Length: 68
Image (cartoon, rainbow, N blue to C red; front, side):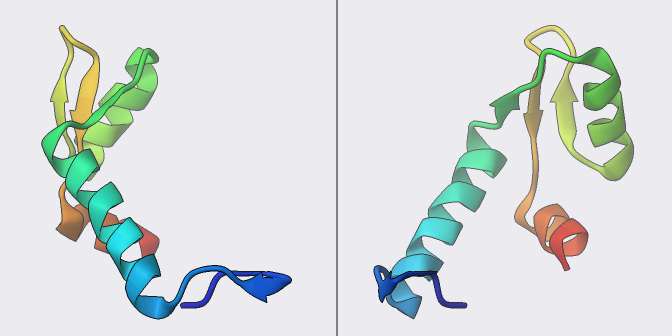
């Protein structure tokens, strides 16, 4: 994968590091989703959802599946 904005800004290793960091954040910290319908859908797809804190945690394997 190559990110191009006129000139190459990041090399493949740097892009992989950014993607891996984002995936770790989504898996460990999760993301706050203030829409109950979206939280329900995320849970249906396999995300770990805490309805009280409105936080969804998404595993790397789930991300790989839905982004493939």
